[in-house]
Image (cartoon, rainbow, N blue to C red; front, side, top):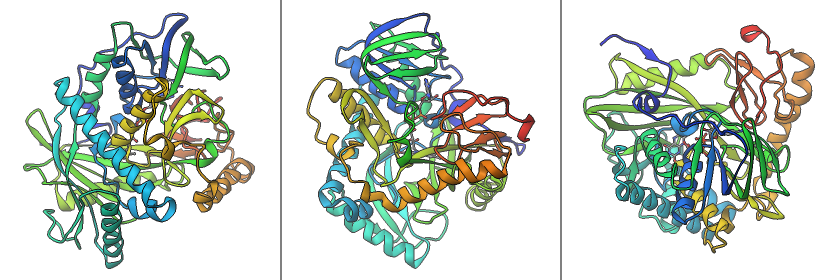
Length: 469
Ligand SMILES: Cc1cc2nc3c(=O)[nH]c(=O)nc-3n(C[C@H](O)[C@H](O)[C@H](O)COP(=O)(O)OP(=O)(O)OC[C@H]3O[C@@H](n4cnc5c(N)ncnc54)[C@H](O)[C@@H]3O)c2cc1C
């Protein structure tokens, strides 16, 4: 086969029959409005519909084309080096709640796939965080101890079934992987109809918090509850945004003759993730790495080359492949925000900050939000509530987030003529690899014509310079 790069997602490319849903056509009302058609929005809408509520879901572009359509889609409760950090920062009980929530979410997703007979290539396999240096090995060993104390049946394994050398890793059996776009396609079909509606090409523009009313570009929607499942808190310009940042990383998918046993991520700073997926009889390897703060990647083309080179060296022999970049959101204390959008009011709910582990966490969010809407108790809600935690937990990251924002708001503005982000006015940076304007403050991105690619920005750039200035 000729060597050929397809600069888009394997998942989107292998789901050509994703139906289109009509835009909203005038004003509407429902029990719940869900904004955003990724893992968080569609799973939340699905649970709310099952509970007998009427739901309208609106999506700015097409469904499942955000981070959920570009992820590596490991559904697991083992999240790199998370449990040691959680135990040290929030205590053992918090780590136990986190583990229980993610294990239950994994079971929920597997249960939905089986109950609804969704053809999304669900496979059960082990998840592994591996080491390649002595320092990483020490950190992985600490992670194993903390994860065990949190209740996971993790073990340290020296002999990993990888085709390259490692110093062993944390190993958790019974996790899962799937084709995320085929999973979300099926969920959308289950949500749409029977008193519930899905609308694509419909952008939420403004939120009236007091009235739980959202103005879109296609009409006004009134609801008892609004779920902001837009990956980032699009209507927020302060208390949530100041505690969030976005990080991009790079994915390569290429044919591989045999599947790998297990799903892997390295403990290194330039993280290297790998797993395989069978799609319509073809085995694919999916690798990922080279993370950086959005807007701060240097020459992003180099990052594509590095992850491609790493993949070629270990797995692939110059065959047709896909590569793409995408981004996830991180909170300053590394614990997602799930729950009340504002401290005083539980009618508007939010889920964000999944820090690269949003497959299981989006289902944790769907459960917490669906319980909040139905006024049911939820054992995990306290841990994730954005307002029920001390700012001191992530003080260092909060400080560097503030410094980055001041730099992009004041200093970069003085020395560069690059366009100002329409979210909070930070100076964007040109990304030649994606031909986009990327904002380092909160991760908004705009195409070369100024149209929004990633929030929190809602509105297009005003007259961007021609193709990268
Ligand atoms: C490279 C990479 C690999 C990853 N791999 C894994 C993994 O293996 N396992 C794992 O657990 N997690 C992984 N993650 C994280 C995970 O994929 C994400 O956390 C998750 O997909 C986020 O889902 P979401 O629904 O919150 O956001 P999205 O999927 O981004 O959905 C948000 C939607 O909201 C829409 N929207 C935005 N603004 C508006 C508006 N104004 N009006 C209407 N709609 C709007 C967007 O268009 C988008 O469709 C990875 C992340 C990255 C970056």
